[in-house]
Structure formats: C-alpha cells, structure tokens
Length: 403
Image 1 (cartoon, one colour):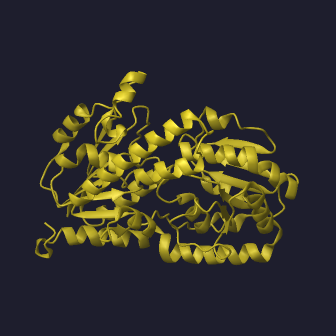
Image 2: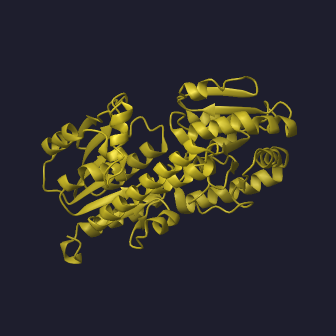
Image 3: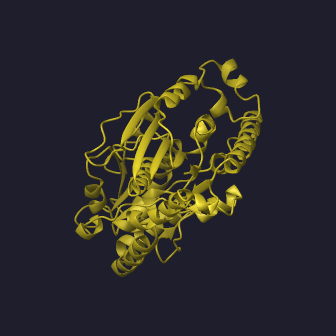
C-alpha cells in the first residue's frame, strides 16, 4: 500500500499532542507500506531530520503564509462563507508545492485537520481520508463558555464574531465529510458533534513506557508537586497555566503547605512571566519528560477550552502518576471520576483533590493502577492504531466499494 499524508504539524521532535498523533498515524500507515509526507508548518517551526527509521519514504516541508496584519484586511477576511482562518492567508504557493510533490497513484490520501483539508483536499486523489484531530467549531464554542468576557459591547461583538466563525466551520466540516471516503475523529464525543456516525474513532494515544515514571516517585522526598505539561504557546494551555498559577496555586498552599506548581513545556512570554519560585516554577522545555513526571505527586490538567482530547491525561495514566483535571480537561476520554482520576472545576476543589492524592497513599495506588489498566486497554498507540490501519486497509480493496 502507498499512502500520502498532508499534515499541519511536523511530528519531530514529538513535543505536543498534535505531533504525537501525526507521528503515530504515519507509523500505522508505514506498517502497511510506503508513506509520503507533505508537512505544512508555521514559518518559524524548527524541522529537524526525522530520527533514523522513523521518517517517511518522501518528505516535503512547506511554510504557511502569514495572514494580513492590518485591521481592515483582517476584518475583510470575515466576509464570505469560508472560515476566516482559511480565507485570510494566501495558500497559492503551498498548493503549488504540493502539486509538484505529488507522485500518484496513491492507495490512500490522508489529510489531517480541517484547515489543511480545506486548503488541499481538491488536489488529493481519492480514496481520501480526513482526520479531524479536533473540531474547530467546538473549539470556538468551548472558548466562549470558558471566557465570555466582561459584559458590554466589546464582549457582545466578540461573541457574535465567534458564532459566525463557528457556523462557517460547521458548514465546512460537513462539506469535508461529504467529500471524503473515510473520516476519523479522536473521541465518541467528537463523532457525535460532527454528526457523522460512520466516522472511525482513533483516540489520541500514547506510546507505552518501558518503565512508568511514577514507579520512581518517592512521596515526601520534596515539596508536594503538581505538574502541568503542555506547549505554553497554545492559547488553551496558556489560559490553563494562568488559571493554575493565579487561582489554584494559592489554594494548594493553603491545604498543602509548601506545595509547588511546575509548568513543563515550551513557554511564551505569557507563561514565562508566571515564574514565582518556590510556589510556581516555569520549567520550560525538557529533554526527558519522564524525569519531571517522576517527581510529580499529581499531574494537573486545568484546561478550560480547546479541541480534541488532552494527551496529558493519558500520559499521566501511562506513567502511573495520578491525575486531577477539570471536567473539560478530561472530556472525550473514557475515564470515570473517582476511579481513574479526580475531576475538579474550581480552585478550592482542584486543591482539595490534589491534597487527597498526596495524603492518601491507598487512594493514589488504587487510582493509578486502574488508570494504567485503562491506558493499556484503550489508549496505548499499538491498540489505538488498529482502527486506523483497518480503515486504510479497507480503502485499499477495490471490491469493497470504497474506491
């Protein structure tokens, strides 16, 4: 089988959930045959060579064009039926690069993300699969719920524009589904939201660690440590970091004197300025996430808006570190409050949940054991990949009517 991937995230180094998803979808396709990769990335993104044996058979990196900077030009992008994120940039050069890169025939063309699908799908031969690693209309709706803004004309205008953008994305997502031979989403919840019962659920998974980091944890060896892992240039993670450092950290130190919050991942200025040791430590990017997870008493996922599902929850499960999350942070993952993790939607509740897991060793051990079992059964990538390879395999058989 020969597959083409068009993706909006260069998967090396694998430091974010979207890169992890792309990397493992590529690996699943490589198990079936040749893979070619067209990566459409941010102009500033570093794109090192793939590790030996991990890359595609052919690779091209295309740099996304920036959008208009003037206010009138940006407002003009709101006009028309397509989402502003698709309309406001010039994609002609990237489309020319993809056209030059193509070497058909392909047994399957896979495009990841609604935005990439909107820009490139018409250039891709069928059978064609669209992977909705998240849903753009759902992201906008969740952001508005999490941050409605200060009541007034400005908030009302922002809400109206977000509703317009969400409607445009909903229309576009439906058009992409209708034109695809296969559709994948990351959760049952997103399948319901997309309104396409034939979509295949390919959860955001995580590679099974040879030695879970939580097994190296020594309670009481340092201050009670709550660790939030993420890319802190991604707006939902920035919001979550500010919420954790600004509202939750004080409550934590009330119930757990000396408690420390550690923010682990690439940080922009909006998060770097939160560094206030010893209460809040902005660690930044690290070589080995396992070392940070080994010192963590709790993985916290205080995310309040965004899309897809949070790999950081599954990462905690895989490494046997207990997880405390907002209800939204755990959304789309088949985890039960009180069984696999603790849910908390206010600063006092999040602090109290962390304290329970720090102080009650029996609760901690029972919870991480159940969470690890759930990970092994549902969310480790060798298990997750089966649904994707089965979909590609079905597309590869002309007798099944899919071509």
